[in-house]
Image 1 (cartoon, rainbow, N blue to C red):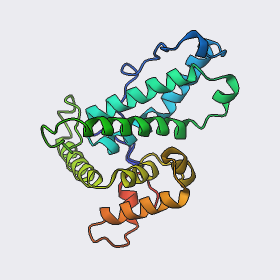
Image 2 (cartoon, one colour):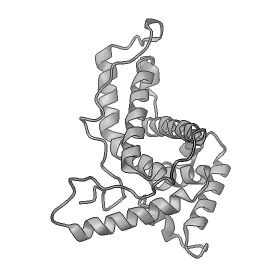
Image 3 (cartoon, rainbow, N blue to C red):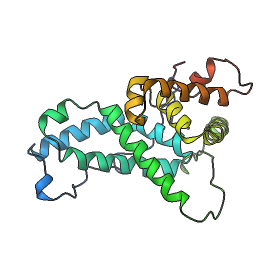
Length: 221
């Protein structure tokens, strides 16, 4: 079956086995004074609560399940390393969803910059890949999910990067505009403009259909 929640389009993709609590690669000078077991517990809680939505965000940004898995795993690795340098107060006052989204988006931007410096060997695929083990009963549902995923990935891939970020963070990441502004590093008004323009481009008629945002899976308009 297609691994997504019927209510909000959240994908399940990064397993517990794929993203384990990593050992921080940090010098002793920047290690946290917080006990390691407390850092591990904070990370586990954050991972369990946010992994599916973060993966869904990565999937809509990259358009490929394998790339989304790698991006999400890298984001959580960086998150753990950062936690290992935080004190108790900073850990307790974190806004995990926005913080993790910031790490994810920054890593995605880094990957885009790296890719832009490489020779183009072939056009990137835009289809959202289904897991090979998803076979057997429910073939029609798989086909429907695959077709919907390809269409959505292709549409999102056609947006300018900043518009794609804003739309995905709003409707897949389910972040409020104020937190998206923090993630993207721009004013809230600019975020609203990116979202509005992105949705207008996604609508077949370019008109004012409010269902476009809900169709992305986030349920917001």
